[in-house]
Amino acid sequence: MEQKRILIVDDESDLCEILSYNLSSAGYLVETAYSAEEALQMDLSAFHLLLLDVMMPGMSGFELSRTIKRQPKTSNIPIIFLTAKDTEDDTLHGFELGADDYITKPFSIREVLARVHAVLNRTQPQTANVLTYNGLSVDADKKTVSVDGKDVSLTRTEFELLWLLLSHQGEVFSRQQLIDMVWPENVVVTDRAVDVSIARMRKKIGPYSSCVIARMGYGYYFCV
Image (cartoon, rainbow, N blue to C red; front, top):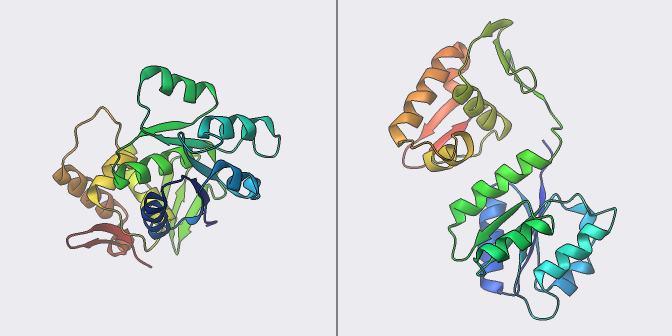
């Protein structure tokens, strides 16, 4: 699958380094700019997502967003604002400028990863609507799964877990990441519930259950 390119625009170099390391570890191609002016010197149309700080010396993140949204080549690039300005008016202003999400500082890296994943899933066209591994086939449009030519019935949660793991082969997801990415926000989910859902999904995919592996102390991944 195509790796998604993310640009971080923030004048705090330490924060850029932390975000860049963790996003890169999650499989994204990451670049950084330490000002809005520096970002405008780059080919912004090459990125799938922009993480913009709001309060920067010179041009603010809000102003940069306004400039980006005016240009046809970049108007559709999703934007997540990162900011210490957390009033309702600030948040609403960010969304009025076309933001796809708004994360207030201080934030956890886990939260950023979950938000980035959600925004990309929501805004990017699917390049591969059917994922296959040998005789295992998962169709995102029809929401169907087949094992060696035979259809199997998965719940919505089981389907989303399988799709996520299969589409990021070899990448380990913690239980909390799986909760953030698969379950609705207003539902309280325990680690045990994740384990049970994974176990049920593995049982249904039969001979490919051994591909869904638990890494002790870390989480789950799909191994080929």
